[in-house]
Image 1 (tube, helix red, strand yellow):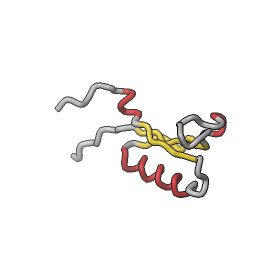
Image 2 (tube, helix red, strand yellow; image 1 turned 45 degrees about the vertical axis):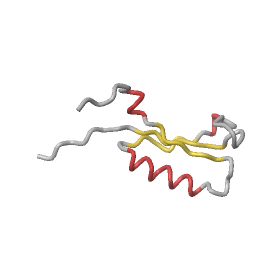
Image 3 (cartoon, one colour; image 1 turned 90 degrees about the vertical axis):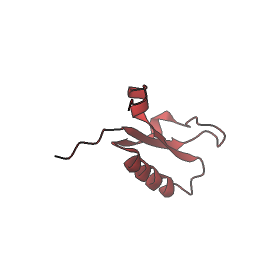
Image 4 (tube, helix red, strand yellow; image 1 turned 180 degrees about the horizontal axis):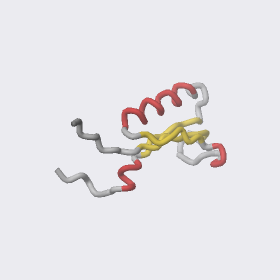
Amino acid sequence: MEQEQKQLLHLVFGGELSSLEGITFKDLAKVDVVGVFPNYASAHAAWKAKAQATVDQAQTRYFIVHLHRLLDPEPAKS
């Protein structure tokens, strides 16, 4: 039986920033929550798609948050 891989949740979200120098969103009501993903690879693919789709909007940025680090801040013990 194949062992199930540990879920390492990641959140992808973004939107228009107030300025290019910071990470303050212009309007929190318009923040685009792309979704929660079970691993970094799938989160990165979603982030990349959104980032490429908004490439002409200089003040729009997308981010990946490592939710698994917030939920379980202790490093995995080998």
